[in-house]
Length: 101
Image (cartoon, rainbow, N blue to C red; front, side):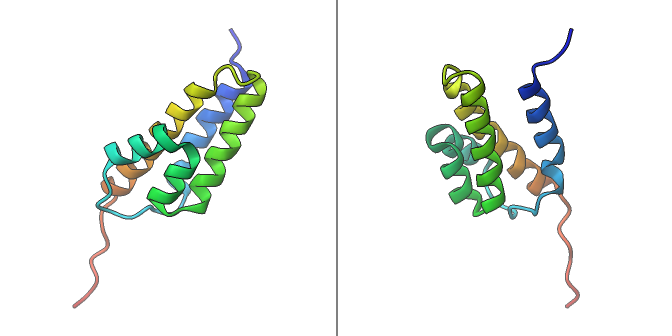
């Protein structure tokens, strides 16, 4: 059974999220999820202070809404929350570089 092209694009985006610049340690995945669900790409962009995350999510949201004629737009807002939580978890899981004293 073949996948919908949008599913392939979302999986690809999540796979390459690790290569994006770190969003900084100490942020809460729950707060990122809530910001994404409530405010979509704008909430994630502001919470993570990242233009890259904002643009990726805006592109996914617009493409998905266009492909489903807006019917699945609420699902894509939840996707924004998941994206934010994953990005924060990845940043918090990376070992911090210790600077010499």
